[in-house]
Image: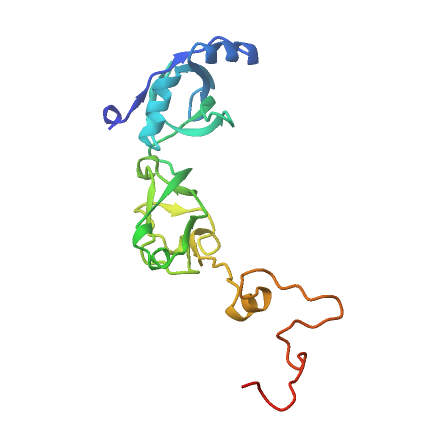
Length: 231
């Protein structure tokens, strides 16, 4: 139902151009456009904090109120600041609830601490953080949870191993898209006892042989005593 979907409060925007957009951002507003469906492209501005709150909810589908009335939309594109991450501009797409659309969906890994590979010291890495799905707007999930608690060392999980939500189809190559992997732990090689003994003497100081001279403990290098050992 439309009244159960989140409403993003937007206001028609007359300002145009990069200079006007900078003034809007300084005033705590985000410029944007909404297009598609049976309506024209409309420019709007929205309170940055309100927009952040709606996007944080994670819903793939929400509503806006335009000159054409209240309509369901999805986020088509976001221009984010590369350093601070805030939204500089946003594009919204009007959708029909009876027509399938393609949309990116975030993937969340769970069960990583219980994975045998992690318990053995391996490192869990999330390779893909979102995938593209096709579904009716009302069937697009807010996110897809992937359980990796069964992964061992040097094992990977592809999209083919992820359960597809009802009414949803993955658009990415399910066999080639790697979702997560556990790499083996790295171990530093320690010098062996024999190598250490060859490098240091009894006092712990390094032994350096004189040029052309063998170390004192080398076999056959010492003087022999005549008549056997001293008593």
